[in-house]
Image (cartoon, rainbow, N blue to C red; front, top):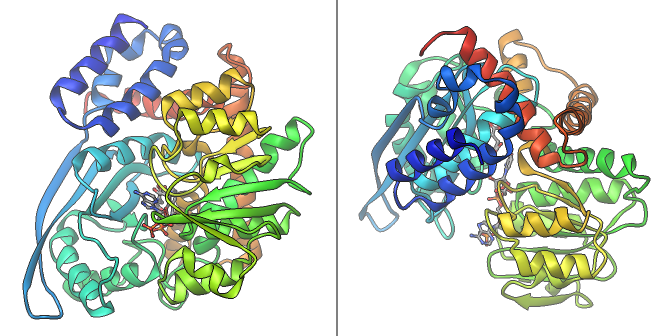
Length: 444
Ligand code: NDP
Ligand code: 2IT
């Protein structure tokens, strides 16, 4: 490792103590940038890595709200505006009890490079709260979202910072957040993406991350003579990304045999029925174990272990560090030939090493799950035009974007001497555009 990269990593760790997920994301990106930094000594002189690893702005705020018993509850909200070199800050909001600045920084940092890879003009940011939407009534979620936006509205706008969904934030939450933003500011503008179709949303945004993941993985495996037709696929999670990845794999002729949530996983040897999962998760807000109620031939297993199921393709779509070294070894042993990260940083660095050493095709999250934010940027374009594209128009653009991201990452990996390593290719390709924009804009 060069002394420049080492120095910057050490500084980040010292400055951001007790934030292991942020350290992990920084190391993964910076270490892979070596070949680009050697070719471009001007980046060190301009302090590009020091600036990239320090968010432009971080806001942390109190979110008081009243529960259904009339008791006041307090959560912590935050928005981290990481980098605006190539466009307004763009990235989701996560509502999960594990949220703290280390999680939001890791996600915001990843978002910079992911957004750059889409080829669209969006910078990187992320936000969220330790509020747990699970088990809350619609009214409690509304009161929380209204309180959250009552502070957040000062820090966001259609041309400055445009939040969206992530874990725990879907159409319901975006609706409540948008309503409160409009009430406070009197502006009906594209300040959030993932909006409902009747008030400024884009067709395909709901499906975009899962569909985009499968479009990119399809291009990657077809490059090596494989296809989804007849392939057995295991997908973790059963939220937005997992559901629409399942749907697209099935449309391409693959068989998804397992899905999970944080309690356990279902295995259906006949192939998961995606309409059942949509009903359980999107309508009833239930648990994946409810699946066996209507599909008695499927099996439910408590806990982890989903990666021990034999498959050709694995798509982790739940959360960070959910697929570890032993899981990767199990997948390799069972003949898995491709892995695509639908979630952000779901594979640990040790797991990624196992895939690369064993020549398993590996699509890293910042390339593979970029379809969600890319379609968010298409929603912003439609809002600016005050016009809507059809489903097929947006879907075709999404497909083009995912195919381009794959080839950009693969070509960049080859150009920098790491053929077939999409981790290196995606990181360098995403980085170069942002670094050059920063150079052009002076010391800011
Ligand atoms: P959802 O909230 O819709 O679903 C999350 C799923 O992951 C649920 O099945 C949930 O289970 C599971 N999960 C969450 N946390 C954990 C945990 N700690 N351990 C085990 N399982 C867990 O979120 P999304 O589908 O939107 O997001 C999934 C991943 O994809 C995240 O990493 C997100 O950052 C990433 N992503 C999302 C995009 C989007 O557009 N939505 C875009 C790009 C990436 P349970 O219900 O039990 O908590
Ligand atoms: O991680 C991500 O890319 C997202 N959660 C989507 C962000 C967005 O702005 O659509």
